[in-house]
Image (cartoon, rainbow, N blue to C red; front, side, top):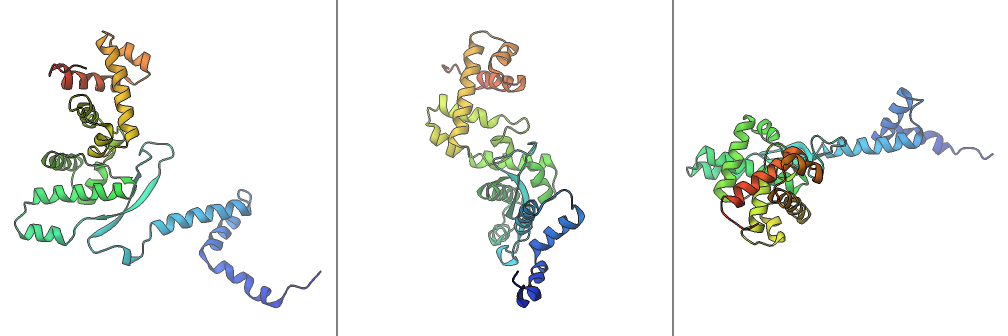
Amino acid sequence: MLPVPSSIKRYKSAHKRFLKPSIENFFKVEFPKFFGPNTRSLIADELIKIFDANNRDINTIKPGQVLWNAVHKHTRADAKNMKLMPVVLTLVNNNDISNLKNGMKISEHKQNVVARILREAYEQDALLSMRDVSLLLAIGDSSATKTRKSYEKRHRVDLPHPGNLQDMGSCITHKYQIIFKYVVEKKDPLIIAKETNHTIKAVDNYLRNFNRVKTLYLDGKDEKYIHIVTNFSISLVKQYISIINQCFKKQNVAV
């Protein structure tokens, strides 16, 4: 057997001074019977990814910005395997100060900030809930929702958030808007997707589900029957029936 070179003997253990070997050694010492070397290596890699994502270089975050963990836009906050996404959000920038200096009302300024951080999170593959907004801006949940809705009404847009992209809460406005734009305004689903911050897949899904409920409801079937046939929840069936009544029957629009 060949002798181990002195250089290996001298320097091999120095690898343990770095982060990954330190994590692997922690699991080796504290949980010797639970994790083998390959598992320890994989766990260490994942922990380092989480650490790196949550510890940005100070040069990548500007004054007025904050690092926040938001729910990934392809998962839900109530999902079993919910995924968080570190995002950088701008709470104040130079334009904000200029606008306030020129007399902008605080209420309008707050609307702009809410709109900006919702969009910034979405551009970084995450969604901010109204609870997130309330924590970041030190306001109540209801105030955050009111501020968001005021901006949406003033600018005639839909801001990205769990309520309108993931059916979280009691928000049904997005369903109403999507269906109204398609049936009444005769818009193409691709255009609707852009105008409502939805994917084309989501738009198609809403329209397909709406048509299923509409066909049964206009045929005289009740909520319970529609629930059984479609396998939709009673609350979802009620939402679509409400849209039919509000958006179409009252306006005598053919559906």
